[in-house]
Length: 347
Image 1 (spheres, helix red, strand yellow):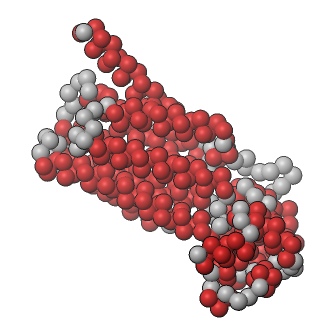
Image 2 (cartoon, one colour):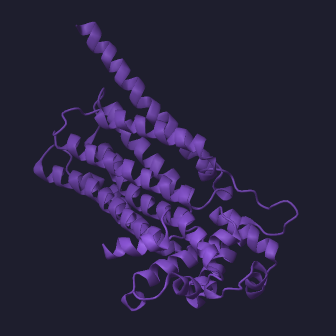
Image 3 (cartoon, rainbow, N blue to C red):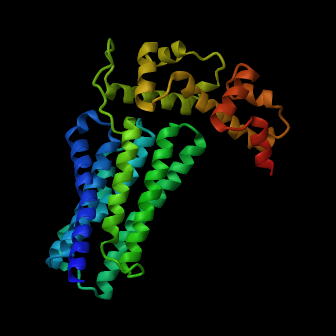
């Protein structure tokens, strides 16, 4: 029996270590290539590092005693996970979004304070210690739920790349599930201390497989396209201006809008505009404009004052120049017809 127990402990250490090593590898890759990576992946690297450090502590503490102050330092790292999830979601969904560095850093202040005052925070299994522990878990959960709500609202606007949207829902959902399990283990609802380490290994392997199947999430951006003078940073700025033009002036409502006209408004060439949209949003100009027009059509179909309008009138008011183009595009982007969408609103 003693031999079996020792063998099981070795298996525990092996499986738990797999997740830590893979996570550290991914994080190191993203950090070392951060200048050529989308900004979102820097926050993913922080997420991976924080979890790997936390799981490493759990694995080590299962075999050797650790000073409570040191344990608190590793616990404080958990406070970087929530903000990293939030900014990763926003930057990946909308690469052109601009957030001041000061507004980003303020979200990481709780982690810094927790680590600075780790010597004063109890870690002895008392009620007070459990309160702090629960706060750390709830902190992550609140950020994840907030990110899910924000993503859902952006999804309704129908301007997020489908592959990225799908990945973010999986990423947030799996992480929320892991946090819930973490909470249950910390409160002895699931009486298995290394359960989080096992689950983390499974999650990291899952993320690794997804990364291999969807390399665009982690690919290194080339500084310049061949025969183009537009860098990735310039593409992001171009798309920021384009988004402002579409959302502020509703330029997409012009039925005869072409890439030449749009690029002229931005003061760049059609080729550069096409590159910027493709590089940042992973879609072409026509798809980009279609997303806005379909979103507008859906908005109009939901308004009471448009209840008696014909579908063709809705199509033209949304910027489409033909009913056939509208029907084809609407069905392609929503998987249902405009008539079916209107009926679903009524029911």
